[in-house]
Length: 190
Image 1 (tube, one colour):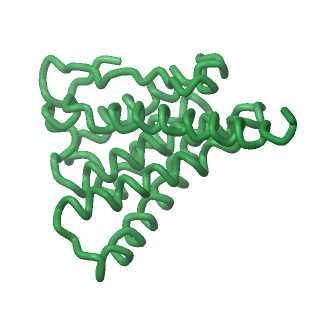
Image 2 (cartoon, rainbow, N blue to C red):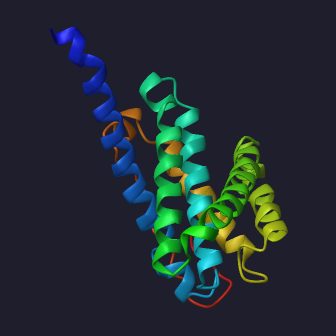
């Protein structure tokens, strides 16, 4: 009898992990510091990009882990993100007739940005910041000239995740560092 329920319990545990990881991801991506400091413009498009960047770092980290449970989480995290995109568009008044087209466009950008960030994170640790800056510049994510600040923050997240035991991710808690306060625009403390 226990064997029959085991797959259902595992699936429920995975959904709960994904939900917790998603909540942490959204809190990190939408925390006000980067917007208040002028590193990222505060509008819907840039918020979507910040969610995409943070999701890319998290998903990349999960795919680097040997645990099977972690290898399966990215799909659930992606689904949560897309559900969030759909809900956000509906809250802004986008109707059913155009929602699929808009979510598809967001998805194309989400996966494109995610792939580019994953490639940048796959470089040597010393090259990550330069590669991520290039991705940010090409995609217009950060305010002009602020790409190094955002790139350093994403590298810091990746470094913290690299040093985190798999058990944290298995419990659904990723240790998201906060965006560093700066003494003046353009100078980030890491």
